Image 1 (tube, rainbow, N blue to C red):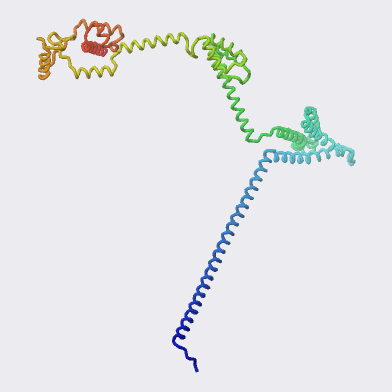
Image 2 (image 1 turned 180 degrees about the vertical axis):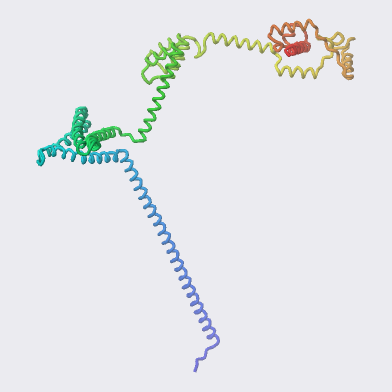
Length: 454
């Protein structure tokens, strides 16, 4: 028989069951989220591991490439060192000498062993070929030793040449008899050229041991030497030309260079000083006196002091120069004072003529017009007359140019050297007239001269 439960109990059980179900669902979601997070973390770790592996691979490749580059550079340096030291040349000479010995020694051996009677071998001659070869090579090695010790080389060279010639002669005779002319010449060269080529090799090795320069340094020094040689040739040509064209200056030039220590003055500085010595002998005499004083300053400073002592002025200035300068300044001042009609002055005068036109007749003012009144006195009457004439567009007639005045202006133009030198001031002083009349005289004479030139 089932236990009776109230509806409150049943609702409480249902609520509890729902809560447990919700808790289980939440736990399930949490478990799923944790699993997803673990999966994401795994993917992240895998990606990070892959990135790390890629970075390590790049570093490994860089290290390997660096090793390859270092090995390539090392091989390059080794090749350069071998080329610089002549490794391959020395090796080739050694091989060549060995081949020469292999050809010449058997030839000498067969020659000496064949000297006995038929069917009898002269065994005592067996040691002669190596004796001759070793004797020749002992002279060669003696030359190398003497070169290292700084001993005379000529005795060893004579010994090498004599012994190599003996061996070459024996091989030439034997080869000629046995193999013909070509064989004789070949065996002779095999005996002679071996010591000669070896001697050349030792000489080059000794020179290379003394010369520690690199190929680039030797090339640069060779270029510098060629440039210096060309510069010296140009300097000799220039000295020859200077000596022919300026003998006095060149004599002073040689004396200056001989007097100073080497390297104190350049060629150009010495030549400039020589030119000054010829041009200004008194100043140069004082200059040499000041230079002889112990503790003298630089040469330009001494020259300036010598110039001031002799000429009494700064360098380049003499009493004659000052006189000419003052005369020139006075001439310029006179021309400026005489030619008072500058373009600005002409502009002002034309403006004044437009503003205040002349109303009187004649240069000095007509008898019928004054500044203060008309012909009958009274300033107002004059003003009214002028005003009435201006109102009608009439002006008082200009004074005609008199021939006598034109003649005076023509004579003035001839004295000044041309009509373009005429000025109103000069004309006023010569003719004795007003400025507007002087301007008309000047323009008339200029027009006449211009017409005559056409």
